[in-house]
Image (tube, rainbow, N blue to C red; front, side, top):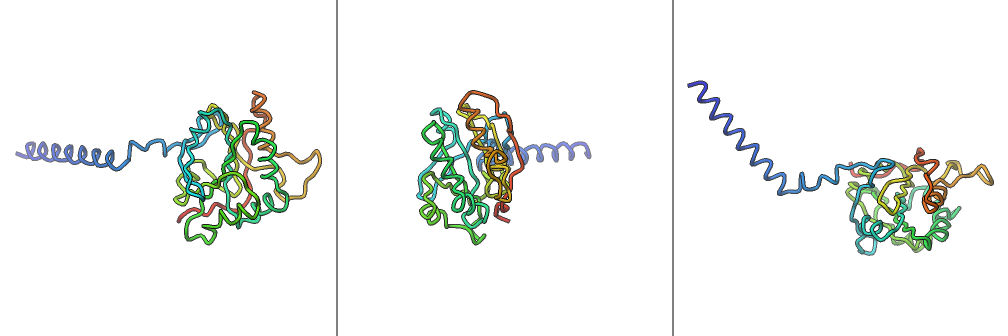
Length: 216
C-alpha cells in the first residue's frame, strides 16, 4: 500500500514538473536563453534589440550582418566622467568623426533606471553635445548586465563578425591630465587594429567612471 502511494505521489510530481516546464516555455524562459549570455573577449557579443531616445529600434546583429564594426558606449549624461569626455575633451565626438565613415557604427547605451534621477535626459544632452549617434534606452538594465557594464563610460568594440574584440576603459587617462605619447585611446587603438585585420594588442582594461545606475 505504501509503495502504491509513493507511485501515485511520484506520478503527480512528474505531472507538476511537466506543467511547470510548459509554463516556463510559454512565458519565455528557455526560449530567451540568449539573455543568459555574457560578454567575453573573442566570443560572439550578446545580441540585443533596443529603442533609442527617439523611438527607433536598433538590433546589434543587423549592424554586424551589414559588415559594420560596432562601438558600444555605456552612457549617463549626468556622470562627470561622461561630461568630461563629451563636453570638455570631446573624446567621443572625435572618435565618431574619425571612424564613422569607415564602416564603424557608434551606439550609446543608457542602463539608468527610471528612479535614478538621471533618467530621461538623453535627447537633451545629445543635442547639447552634438552627439550624432543613437542613445539606446536599457531601463531594465538587462543588456547592461549581459555585457557586464559597470561604469559610465564602459566601452565594448564588436567586429563585423559579431565577435567582441575590446572591453574596458575609453582610455588610460582616468584623471584627465595625460597628453602626448603617454596618452592611449584604447578604443581608437582597437578600431585601427580591427580595420587593419590585426589582432587587438590590448583587448581588455579596467573601466573607470560612475557606477551604472541599475534598477535595485
